[in-house]
Image 1 (cartoon, rainbow, N blue to C red):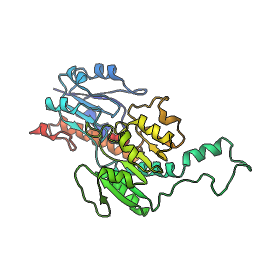
Image 2: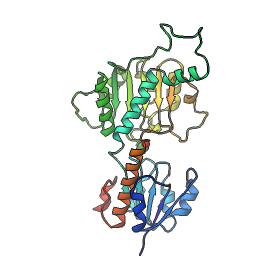
Image 3: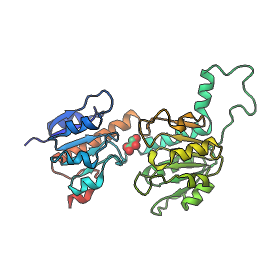
Image 4: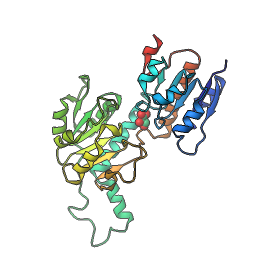
Length: 323
Ligand code: DGY
C-alpha cells in the first residue's frame, strides 16, 4: 500500500523533490500558516506528517488521525508536539539537530551586540532624521556596553550553548555556564544558576522548553541579575516570564534584552516588551539562513524517508519506540 504523507509547508533543500518517490505526497502551499483546523482536515488518512515548529501536534489532533505512523519536524525544538501522546502510540518523532548550531549561536551574538551597542535604536535615530548638528557626536552620544571582556552566563551548555561559548572566547569574555547535567567544557566555568545570574553581564538562554524550564527566568531569577545586565533569548519564549522581564527592563533593573522568541508567536503587538526601546526583537529567526534552512529541511525529509522505508529515523527524539 502506498503511504500518504502530508507536509505542512513548502520546504527548501534538495531532498524534498525525492519524497514523492516514496509516498503519496500532499503539501500545504500556503499562503501563511496552516492553522489547527486545516491541519486536522489535511492529515486525515495520512500515515506521515512533516511539520514545522508552528504546527501544534497535540493529543486532540493525534486522536483524530488513527493511521499516523510517524512525525518529522523541521526543527530541533519539539515543544509543539505532545511527545508522550506520540510515544504512547509508538509513533517516532524526528527532529533536525546539529545543522543549526552555528547559525543560532550567530543570532545570539547578533542580538547581544545589537542590544549592548544600541544598534537598532541608533538605526531608527538616523532614519528618523534626528541626527542633526544639535544632536550629534558627543562623549555620551549613544554609549552602550562593551561585549569584549565582559562576563557571559550561558544557561544550557548543549551544542548551541557551546557554540556561543566559542564565540565568547573570541571576544575575550569570561564564560560561565549552568547546565542540568554538570557538563565540563574547557574554558567554561561551571556554576550554579544563582551564581551565574549574579555574576554575568550577559545571560544567554540555550535550554529546551520543557515542564522543568518553563518560566525558568521568572521575576525572582531576573531580580538576581545585575542591573546593567542584558538578557538574550534565542531558545523558546516560554522559558522567560515576559511580563516580569518587561517590568525589570522598564524600571531599570535590567539594562536591555535581545529577544528572538516569544511565548506566543507571532507575538501580539500589545506585548509589553515591544514598547521598550532597550529591547531588540526578532521574529524567531535563530536558524534563518538559506543554507541552514535547506539542511534542516533535508534532514526532516530524510527522517520521513527512513520511516517510510521501515528504518529508524536518523534523528529521533523518542527512540524508545523502536524497542
Ligand atoms: C528550532 O529548530 O527549534 C529553532 O527554534 C528554529 O530556529
